[in-house]
Image 1 (cartoon, rainbow, N blue to C red):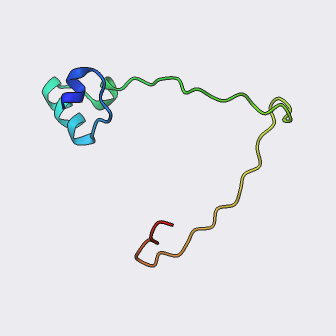
Image 2 (cartoon, rainbow, N blue to C red):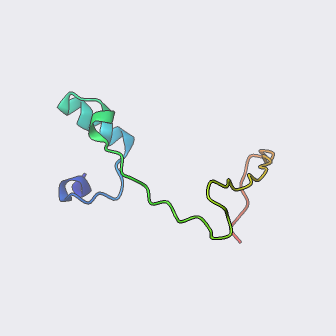
Image 3 (tube, rainbow, N blue to C red):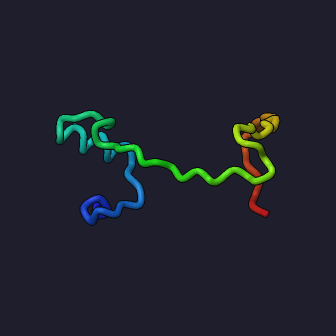
Length: 70
């Protein structure tokens, strides 16, 4: 919570938002303000309005454990 008081929090946990909303008597949506996201310029090779090709995602079987880091 000290990060909130300083005005520069690294993260705000959902349970902290719940407490703040309970104290203030408001909803979470009233506290959060959307910020515009910087979108990179399209590549010069693409024509305007071109859509990048989607890649296929194949889910991996869940074996119960993850692999160690490489």
